[in-house]
Length: 135
Figure 1 (cartoon, rainbow, N blue to C red):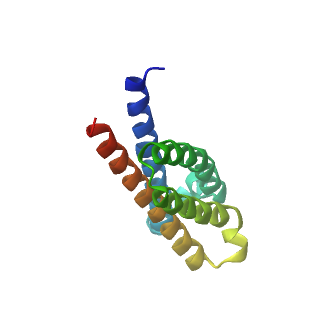
Figure 2: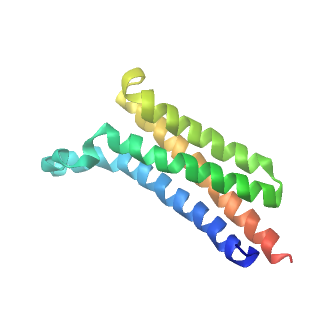
């Protein structure tokens, strides 16, 4: 694969991970409102805890690959740390949050984790573009 093709794919991973993290946060925040307004939403798979777990198994590898590739390029490993902390919070919350935390803490942890993942990927995306534009 040529370097010219590799750059857009690396940046695409950041954009996709940001989108999934936003989906996770919105799911957590808007689903209760949606269930109150339209109770039949509970019959859809969006209301199930497995939906959250499914999202994390897309976010986790995508984030790790995008952040690793980006940080190898721009050498700012603090960006990687921000993203990994966010993914870790999402992972622990998705797997154990429902059983170990109350609903409020689970949602709070999910929003915090999603926010950290989003910030990590935005920083990664910007740093990679800065490095790519310098040459």
